[in-house]
Image (cartoon, rainbow over all chains, first blue to last red; front, side):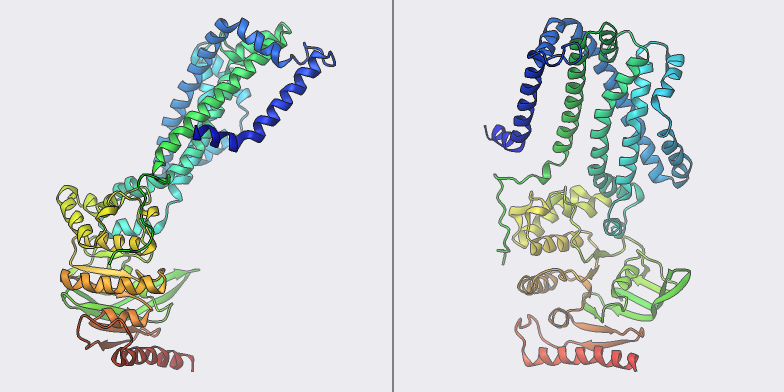
Length: 266
Length: 249
């Protein structure tokens, strides 16, 4: 109950604004001021969602697979590269500029190449997703690893710790806040990546579905795909945020263990 | 000698130039002795401790811990900040050094006993952010003890505490040290702290010269300012000031 209360307290303004906006939107379309093939009403979108739920579920599943696969590959590769760059300056000098430059290439321009290489299989979409999610993960992990406190390193060294110990016990845990910022970004971007991939060549997925609906001037269909995509993005973000919260559970203020903050000993 | 510095010089590079920080320093501490190093800020006290622990290499001279050249891991080091790892409980923080030495299992009992001894057993599973500044500093000292080293270097460990907590900490540490039979080298700029805790005080002058003052007071010492303590503090203060007047003129 308390959780719901806290949630409402944080978000009631947003919720009110959203309800107001949806209401105004519904009214605009229903009163005939906006034709529904330009902007379908929220109710119409909901209806379309419900009517096509079986096929939409199939497409959502396809996009979900591409996103998760792309995200996981990007995370594993990104973290490995960041750690390698952190340990070996020569790797950093060689690869980091290339990683940065790779971001200046418009992904859309690259996608036809992926279609060329991977065809219309799931891998062309996964490749776009990896490319989009990779960058924030590498940068945030690498930055996080570099932003540790020198004093902690000295403390560990004074205990006779080797580089691996220092990495494991200080630098890695201290990189986590930055790492999670990157992960949250990448989680959202992954959905975008998968959608772009589907636009450029696919036989299933929400991106493909929205394009097909747009081709047949079915605005409700396009909007229901957009709705599901944004829902997917929110779910991924939520999962990443939850993982982060779990990781930092030590920060929470514990009510059951009330420690006396005063110096009472001796 | 538990700790010895022989003709140690150290300089840092700054903008292509070498800035001498320490010149021809000679210091020593006997086994079981409590030695304080005091001096104005900028005399390189903290650097001296880093050299002593082997964290930095001197340009010249020789540093030994128990007659062996000092390398990282040869002595315990307690830095200015408590530097407790915020994601580790008190117990896991205490076991940090044993983990590095791969002696975690053997040392757990010792850590529990130490917590018990200082009355902090209830906080074994607490996180650092749940503790007060004084408690964190106590845990940091226990962590230094659990390195298991004979020689401990403390770098202004009470600098950030308020006056009353600081006094409590002085008594706490004096009592603990007397039971433990460890050699402690403490860097501080608190004159009263150095007089209350030490057997011997070394004044480090900006010129690199050192002066030694023995503290003949019996232990346990008075926490109030007795005439003897006041006199020692005055002697120390004029020693520090005298030198700095000289260096100005």
